[in-house]
Every structure is written in C-alpha cells, then in structure tokens.
Length: 407
Image 1 (cartoon, one colour):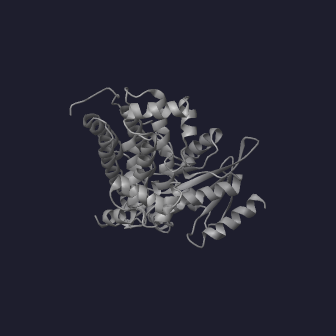
Image 2 (image 1 turned 135 degrees about the horizontal axis):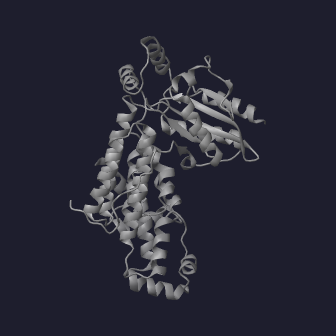
Image 3 (image 1 turned 180 degrees about the horizontal axis):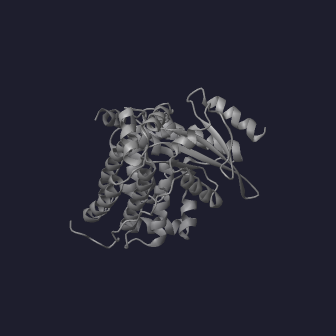
C-alpha cells in the first residue's frame, strides 16, 4: 500500500472519533494538499508563519521524530516528516486544534495580548479558532504515532514524539551538595506509579512515563477552561507532589523545596502548554536523578547496589539468581551471602518486597484483576501471589485494594 493510501485510510478511521485537519507540504512549505475546505486556514492562524516554518524545517534537518508545536493562543499541531535518502521530502501536518475546550472570551484575551490586528481580521480569526476541533493529548499523541507509521513504516513510543523546544534549556540552579536555607479509572494508580519512581530514584522512569503519563497528567483534559492556565495549575500541583515524593525518597527538604520553587517559577512564567510540558519533564527527571544519587548508600558495595537497582527497575520481570550473579560478577552462592550481609535481608526477600511495592500501585487501578497483576509480576499463580502479598502487607490483595480505594 502506498503512503498516500495509508494516510487516506488512517484519516478515514480517525474521523470516526475526531475531525482532524490534515495538510501536506513540500520541503519548501508549499501546500500540496489538505482535507480542509479552506486552504488559507492554517497559514492564517500562524501569525509568525515564516519564523515557525523556519523552526520546523531546522528541526527536520537534524531529526526524524514527529514534532508537536504550539503558539501563545494554545493552538497545537503535529508535524510528521517524510524523508528520502535522509533528505526532507514532505511535511505531513495534523491540526490545528486545541488540547481542551476554550471559551470565546479566553480566545479574545489571548489574541489581544499577543497580536495587534484590525477588528475585521480579529473577528474572522476568532470564528476560525472557535471552529477548531478539541482533541486531548491522550488521544492526539496516538494519532501522531499512527501518522508517523503511515509515512515511515516505523513504530514509535509516545515518548519519542518531540515537543517544540524552549527558547532556553531549563536546568536546576541548585547543586546536589548545596543546602540552601530555606474520577477516571486508572488515574490515581498512574499518579502513584509516577511518584513511586521519584521516591525510589528509579532511573527506569521513562517506562513509567510511557505507561502512565497521559492518564496522570491529562485524564481530565477534555474539560473546559483556558488550556494554558489549566496546564499551569496541573503543573504546579504535579511539582508539589513531586517535592513530597522526593523528600520521602530521602532528598533533604531544603534541596527539594528549592528545586521545586525553581521549576514552579518557570511554569508560572510560561506562555504555552508545550513549554509547561517540557519544564515538567525536565523537573521529573531532575528529581529522580537527585533521589537516586541520595539513596546510593556508600556502605553498600557497587555490585550489590547494581543488583538492588536492577531488581527495582525490573520488578515486573522474572528475576533469577543466575542473572543477578552475572550482573554482580559473583558466584550465586557468594552473592546470596554478601547480599544478606550488606542489605540485612535475603536477596529473595528483597525481590519480593520490590514486587509487592509494585503490586500496591497496580492494585489502585480497578481495571486490573488480581490475576492480571499476578501475571504482570511473573508470579506462578494467583494463589501464590496472594500468599506472598499477605505475608509482607498483612492483608490480601483484595482487602488492600478495597481499603485504599475507599480512602
């Protein structure tokens, strides 16, 4: 099937759920085709079109992953790049759209704040903007993944999708050693998974983001309001909860609050949803790296610490003593004795504790059955999983779920 045919089939299928506009441009940003009745719509909504086009083309020269861009009014669109022998051939665009409902008053305020235009042109722009589809990120990102597959034949994760780069890189000014003075199913479980990663300093956090980020961050994106202000509110809440998770993980409160204040200030001064998303991604990774460094106990040898990290990051997998011995560079017998001596518990208890901690998070998702969770954690049977859970927690998986979800 040709690329054109795949795209047509993709758009027809997407239209069952959302009305999405599609645009195909050549490498000079000359329009080739669109499924929208007025080909002037997209250029008309991009007030700094030349500058925006140059940024997208510059990105495409170096990268091949899809790019999601946005402007101050909150409008977003995605660019997917078709290349031939490494050279850009076509740009396929989905959008423009809004990630959440927006009122006419909010549109007017944003236009007046950022652009100077005649009353007639302003009225025309507002009418065009109001007609844009609303597609939450939890739906839009999979559509971008699908379009990329139609164009390139490559399957990617949503974490591979890039968002419009900030004008400057955001890095924390607080050194590691510095101590300044001072209702949807699965959303809660997804949030707990994200914050558990911070608390553990788990460097395998990209897996958690891939599995949970959209449930946690955009679970209610369909509801109305100014998308930028709403993103700020979500972002500030996310930062506050991340600070608490980092402190629970062992990061000194003075450092945690200083780092959090820095990112909160960046979020408060942002002017696009894309900027806020990039700041939060940087903040999340920053906290995890700091907690990981803090939790690396100098009294634990590097081989044993490596085994602990592997167990925590692969709690879903079947973990064998043979694999751990290979990682540590010890014999299986020597590893079990050295692990018990340094950690104070047996290696099997440590593995089970890691799995049970993971199970606690999974049990917060009502969509998963006890059997599902047992399978995900590679237990041989549901009954054995329940037996181990009872031993370490003091209640059965069902009782734990019931009590936690009632809170």
